[in-house]
Length: 100
Image (cartoon, rainbow, N blue to C red; front, side, top):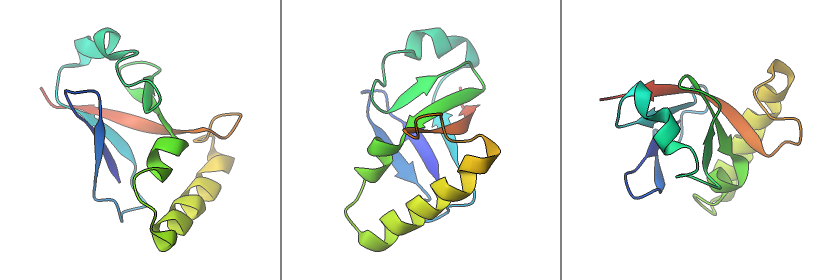
């Protein structure tokens, strides 16, 4: 699953049925990370240029399809023991790829 950040502050999901790979893709340069902080409030928070935290609520809001949401829950459950879910269970950690 790829969280593709859009210039208007929204996101789209690419490869939404790939629950084994999870990353954030940004059309821009690594040195833009400071400019992007706060721009995607409620969706993505950048810890640094390599790591982002994606709001689980934003992912859940992508669709109402029950089967997809169950797979998302499974992905989250499997990621939690490895430190990929924040302490309160509201965000998923993702690697950031810069394309610019």
